[in-house]
Amino acid sequence: MTRLSDLWRLQETDIALDSRRASLDDAQARLGESEELLAVRARHEELLAVQRATESSQRDIDVEANDLRAKITPQETKLYSGAIKNPKELGDLQADIDQLKRHLATIEDRDLDALAAVEAAERETRAAAGEREATEAAWNEEQSDLRERVARLSREIDEYSAIRSDQAEYIDGDLLKSYDRLRAAHQGKAMAKLDRNLCTGCRISLPTNVVNKTRAGNALVQCPNCERILTA
Image 1 (cartoon, rainbow, N blue to C red):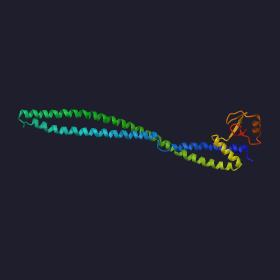
Image 2 (cartoon, rainbow, N blue to C red):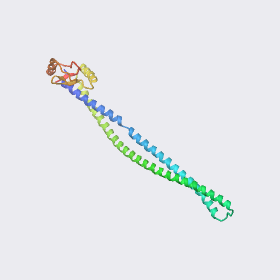
Image 3 (cartoon, rainbow, N blue to C red):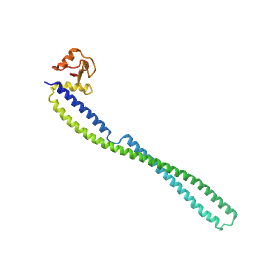
């Protein structure tokens, strides 16, 4: 005959198993790259792309400015060489040089703005790189802890499963089926203790005869409300 104490120990083992299985599911679900990590990486890559584009734009402006300087220098050499005597021709050449210089001044202003944009982009990228590094370090540490936790919980589940199998051998087959059904219906707890005249499972006040039978321990008694198996 199955003793209620054996059934209670089985429930304690099952509760321990349920807890570890839930913890294992949680740990396994958190293994792998998190949304936060992916977002931080994406932000860093996005800012790197912006920085590269900004640097490329600034280099293009530099090239444009250097091309203009390359045009202005020979023109000024020609202007001041004394080779041109015609005043109109000299005037036209001076006007061309002045126009080129005005254009160059505009480009140099753009270059200053572009350099400022490059510096700002570099600052943002450095900050994002630091955030990425810190996030990845924390993630790596968490993943290491999670892998250790998964391994530990898996070992404990195997151990408790073996204990559970041994304990179940001493439980009557029909009673074990009822117990498993009640566990499924009541969040893993098929049994409940008495608290004076209360069922601790559903907190309902029990009839006196149910309380007395439970305390006597000579028969299997169930709560008339939640159907959990009662034990004193």
